[in-house]
Length: 405
Image (cartoon, rainbow, N blue to C red; front, top):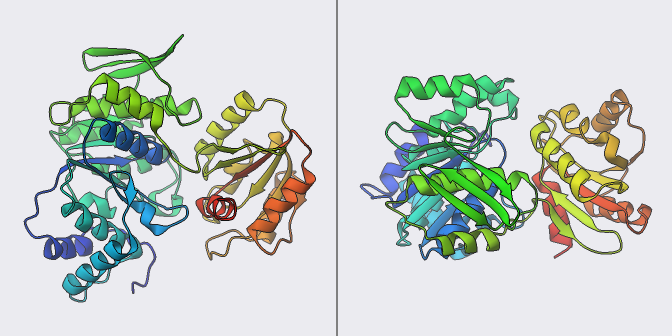
């Protein structure tokens, strides 16, 4: 219905929102942005708040298996009928305004949340922040998890430029949590100019490892011997630390006791992030699709699977920094298996082979008709005790999960 799959801007979607839900009072709203760590941060917030007895709506993207995953109330995806009914309500008030795929989905989530008697809604930014559809809602508190170079065609090729787009979700007088321990100066200058008080990781709050888990400190308090989040990777402590800062900042409206906090950390779930499948040849899934995320993945592989021969099933979108994705991890990979993804944005095998040649990588398998064939080839070639790694883009991880329920 819309000529572009992505069309950033708030005027069209705001006009339809005002017709769809005129005068609606939103529940307390937490907005989560950033380059990496958004999904983990939303999952942590959702888990902790539900453990505290709150009724929570969570809007995320992209999905892995079913569109319904994007719109959850109390941990349960909205069903087909509810989403279709929301789309019909949007269509009735759209009045000729053109909406993109993401804008339709955002409005559907807000429509369903408005009828769900929520205590809190958590909105994940889809792309950027300033012009993303979720930014039609003024958040009561916002978290920017990390700032790295991604989506260069949209936001530029510097962290300084990208930070300004991310900062668009912040509001004067509302808590603004920065999870990135090294935020660009442009973000700090933006906040100063707008009168926004930032709470920064490592400066205003932080964490430390302890013998019995980890400790968090900030905002005049200290929490000790917390359980590690049930999400693999040391970087999840960075995400959890920022999440705790966000929850503390809205503690008067949404108090969370220590028992709920601990339960939420221990029970959080999120597919596709260092997701491990055991077996004679184990498989690790990760949706890492930019250099920063791959550097985190490399650290995890070196810590968790030292010395393992790694067979990497790989696909990536052509608008990504593909060389920046491959370079940090190429020394760890025994063989690459180029999986076809039926999307126009996906880099073709010939494009990838040319780039791998430039990067002096020659152990490559290809010619597969489908991603499932690439998975099978990696498992056949791998020896017992090796590791098959599936990474590079969400759709590739989705393919694996769809064929390995």
